[in-house]
Length: 431
Image (cartoon, rainbow, N blue to C red; front, side):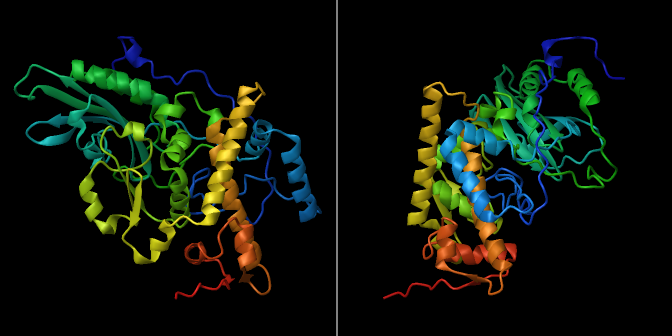
């Protein structure tokens, strides 16, 4: 029987008032669907159908382009962003927790799983995922991670104690697993309270047990593996439907920080993401504020079989010789970054002069890259459906790419997505 008698703020795990999402208009089926390699909204989402309206029956392409140009001229950046974002497909996600656990650091044996529900779930490796190497140097942290088909969030805390057995410090992490990535943040404050509770009162799990009973999802038999794969919810449809804390505590709400940190190199990472390359980002603890997926283990830099692209601070590198050309910025990359900054300045100006502008920087950045992806994949699919299937320098420029500088990127892109197109852009001769 689960104890639920002692009501306290620790038990207040409810997310707060529900968010009412507007009903998205139904999009007609078209040749451009969400890419198989990524979720909606990220840098490497692949071909997306949401950034523009589905083509209306009988409407010519020229008429659609004229309408889009009229929209851009008529509305300010705030209104235009709002109209574009309303065309994105919205998706209801299951708010379920399939496991809750406590991890502790034992001075003699290291990281270990102290407690969990359900007791028969496979949590092998969670003790290391939820307590990063080097955490003994910090007071608190939060970590997002992947475990099998599920996503996890853990809150870590370190408390000094007068105990020779614990060597003067007690360290624990309290975490959960869920089928949904984007809803994990709702329990951030609850987990922070619970890890503090576990440090002060070790072995008292009634609050966590009550939380699990309230939120548990159906877990099918078989070592914690579901019979059917849950949908992968990498990023939300649009940022403004999230709670305010998403901007700080959730990786999906940190696109603006990510872009400001990397500057023009964000275009390099965008290309690698579109090519479905494995990007490993190194960051020492605390890892929560870094807000993007990475590792605290510097040793992984030497394990080339684990990644294709390695990022340390603002240094992006690859050990694959054929990917080396993609590390160089070209004129088209610089132009895209200039336009991105220009749109950002327009949005900031609209907010300063008091325009009714709900969209934020996060919306702008996500929609910018969705548009880039759409331009590329729409062109490639149109060329592949044509008779001669010839991709020319003019097509490359139309996609916002440099015909020469992005030649190797285009070749890799065609191969990665299996698009049947003949590239006729000449390779510049070397002297």
